[in-house]
Image (cartoon, rainbow, N blue to C red; front, top):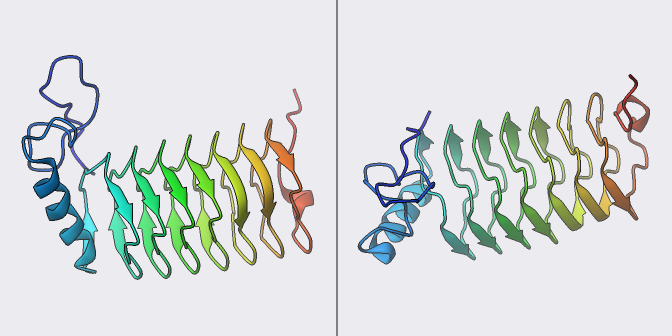
Length: 196
């Protein structure tokens, strides 16, 4: 797991970039540090316990990445391809994803809560025990995916498809769903309300 060390700057509540004393925003040379972190990601080898939140990724090819217990929260991903990647206990909360591909990924215990997804593709993926609490997803596809025990509580889902998905124990409680399609999925095994 990455270190839970806060930036040394007063009143900053962001975690430090791995190996640094500050977060990315307060780093003396942000561009150089961003490029170093991006180079590590592009290496395609397994990456574990790294914290590099607040980055911007545009048109980056992260296919076949293997990320373990990494912190990429508060980041912006545009036209980024995560296809065929493995994500375990990774933190992407409060990030923005625009036209990103997550097809054929395996995500276990990863956190996307509070993030925004626009025109993203999660098709044919295993998203197990993953946290999508409070996400705002628009024009996205989760078709042919296994979402066992994943959590969409308080999510806003607009024009999102879950065709032919395993939704066993997937929690949609208190979510707002507009033009959401569950065709051929076992939506009767998902959770949409609470019984007290």
